[in-house]
Image (tube, rainbow, N blue to C red; front, side, top):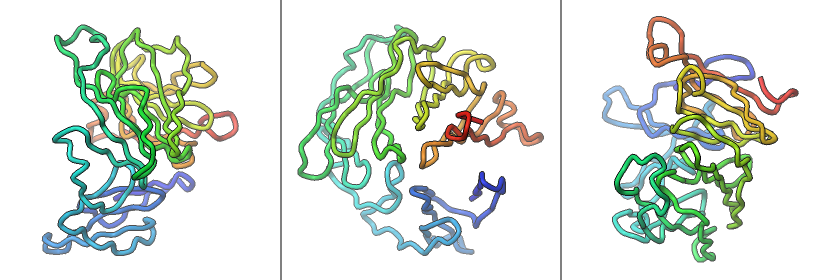
Length: 280
C-alpha cells in the first residue's frame, strides 16, 4: 500500500495488504496475511495508526461503494428478483421497483434490442417516504449514483456518451430532494465513449474516454458553461478529494507508455481547482 502526500510530495510505503482495501473519510480498511499466508488480520483507521479490526462473521461482506466496513448480508439486496435494494450511505438506500427495455432508441444503431433499464425510488431510511427517481437507471447510459462527500449528496450521471444526446445530471440530497444539475445543451464531444463527472466547488471535471487518443480523449473542465481541455490521452483511477477541490489520476500518453516497465512514462497527477486562479 502506497500513500502519496501532496502537501510534501512524499511517497510512503506501508505494510503489504491482502484484500478488502477500502478508503472512506480518511480511514483505510485492509487485511494482512501472516507468515503462513493462511491467516488474515484486518485493520481500520487512519493510515498512520490503524487499529485491529474484528474479522467478518460468516454472514458479512465488505462494503466498498458508499461505506467502508463489514455489513450484514440482507436478502432484500438479492438481485434475483424485483423489487430489491441497493445500499447507499448510512441508512440511505435505493429500491429497484421495475425492469423494462430502455424506452430510448439505440443511440448508434448498434443493437437490435435495447438493454434493460430500471425504475427506482430513493429512501432516506427504513420506513421513510419513497421518492421516485425522474430517470431510469442502467440502460444505454448506465446511470448510477455516486456519493460526493463535499456535497453530502449523491450524483447520478451517465457513464456512456453518445453524440447528439444531451448530457443530464441529477443530485439526490440525503433528505430525498432531487435536483437536476443544469448543463449547457450545447455540451458535446466528437465520438461515443466512456464519460465520468467529478463536481468541484468551482466547476465539473469531466473524464472523456472517446474519440482520438492524442487529440480529444482526456480531462476537461466545465465552468460557467465553457468547456476547456486540461490534459490529453489516457486517464486511469480518477478520484475526487473529500473537499471536492482536487482531482487525482494516473496518466500516460498512450497504452504502451502506460504499461511500460522500463521508463517512467506513467505518472500520478493532481489538479487543484480551489487554489487562486482556479487550477494548476
